Length: 184
Image (cartoon, rainbow, N blue to C red):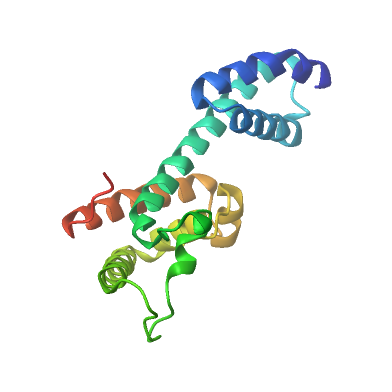
């Protein structure tokens, strides 16, 4: 196993770099793929390892790109919550939300109104989702659990988690588009 991983390391990194265009992300993805191969398939014959590793690497890249796409969507939708000043540029947009019923602080009333409206639309969209899709979506993208952790928490297979997340993402995108929220 060690010899195989040492042999495939550079090619896998280059492959991931072409797909992701980010050195750090490519390193993470390749490392995760190698760990998965070692954990789950270390007993397999050496001639089966290249095909298994390639499939795992492709899946890791695909999962990373999906997560990045969803995070980008939510980041752009929640950019309305971002502070305007430079010193708070790294702040979490959800921290800018005031609790329900709290008195609005000094600031821009229009911005506060937009924030409340957008939050209500997102909450309504989440409530429209079937229970399993809502659970999978919130665990994966709000709690930032990986597919395996979400599957364990929900008591289903990783494939089911991916299906539920995909359907939830598409349904929420449609819901938001119908409500006039566009991520562009």
